Length: 141
Image: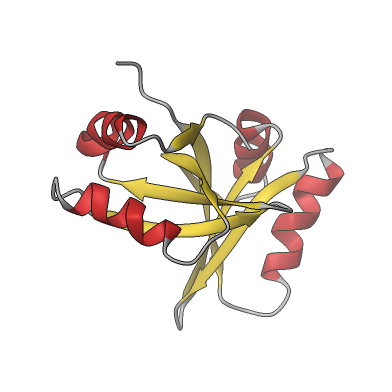
């Protein structure tokens, strides 16, 4: 089975005022739109996770500006906007001991999209299990 993946960029930025704006401004000036964004911080630095309209170009312009950028393979799932629908997905993966490393959402009008990161070695298995259980996987958002 072919892996269904979305490429996500993790940008390491200093945890200080203005850094988020600087990184996002670089993307704007390069005519790159952000489709999804999540910021996780610590006392020293922050990790800005983004999915854009042009990941290859975004990675290049950010690296050229001095940012450390890593690419990760994640996948998106579309679920109904009902209580417990995400728990069903967690349970499908948990039964096969597939750990969700992190997740964040992208909102649509009637359905929710969750971006999910699992260990690389579990990606194909996670895709297969979710498809078998009728969960819609997304290769782009």
